[in-house]
Length: 443
Ligand code: UD1
Ligand code: CA
Image (cartoon, rainbow, N blue to C red):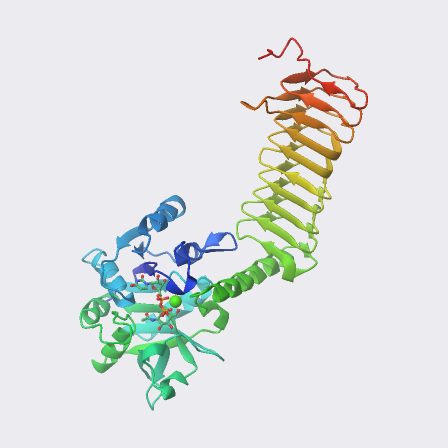
């Protein structure tokens, strides 16, 4: 008997040998999220009562990411017996004993699947009362995938891995996406019959399909409409290709939300970034992490923003910024470097060849040319002359510079911190300002 309850098993225990990487394959990121994270994000939208992730290779690193970002996923450890069949067997054993619903198996290295495709798979499975339903796809180049072999009547009879395939089988264009729904009871029973007699000496999950058919159980394959969705990542060529496809989707989504993206091919936007309508993105721009951009802002060309907040109508050109807040109507660049903790007030300016760090620059204040501003608080309506440098480091510790409102400084000034400059002060060209005001204790 089957009820409509759903458990999801995500396979993430493999080494990913073909990546030739120290980082486990499923942790390689695309669009700012690890491969397995994309799979889990999709999985979490299906209303499953339990999601299990099978780990083994570099398990502590994988588990660290899972517990930080997907704390509801249940971690299951695979033992030394290799193969997708063993991974699923161990995960099924970890389900509650009375679980009798459907088990959806997803691969941690198939990141482009969308909820719609999986819902169609579940519906097909339930509609046919099948013991197993495989997600398949028809590919021009099926190299590397398992092939779905059908009998003369067109019914799925088994899946054969590329390494075990005859030439005729290898010529089949229908591939196994590595995504399946099984009736839990059938999965339990038939996994117990899977052996390791194959080219790779592994327990193949795919063997369950042939075994079910031999036992006259109903097995179906649902051919994915969107073949890109079934794309599996085994090496870095495929990693880049999956990243490109996902980015194209994200770009299109924002364009439909009212964002002008001049060159989709050179614009990279992470999945977590948020853009308001009437933002304009110019070529060669990378918007990463949890960056948020408000309406009317123009970003680029040649700009990277990581975890930044950009206010309404701000203009940012040829800039590299991390963890910076840029106020409404402010301008940044060209050629600016904003390091963490930079907060630029509304209508402020950080200009050309300017580096900032851990500094607040008040409303309407300008640092227009050739400057380093670190550990500094600048008031409102200030103008720093070209070549302003805050000397914030005395070889032991960092000190703060405080500049009041409406201060105007000459060109080529050095502010030797700790130092405070009062409201309305003016300095001449070439000044070295090193006397601390009595308000700041001299070290
Ligand atoms: C698998 C399928 C193949 C299918 C392809 C789709 C098998 C035997 N083959 O091949 O038919 O076309 O996916 O992308 O299932 N994993 C574990 N434990 C293991 C081995 C692998 O959890 O012992 C995980 C991996 O981390 C990965 C997934 O299972 O996320 C698939 O493993 P992989 O080695 O990439 O299988 P493929 O050769 O791609
Ligand atoms: Ca794979």
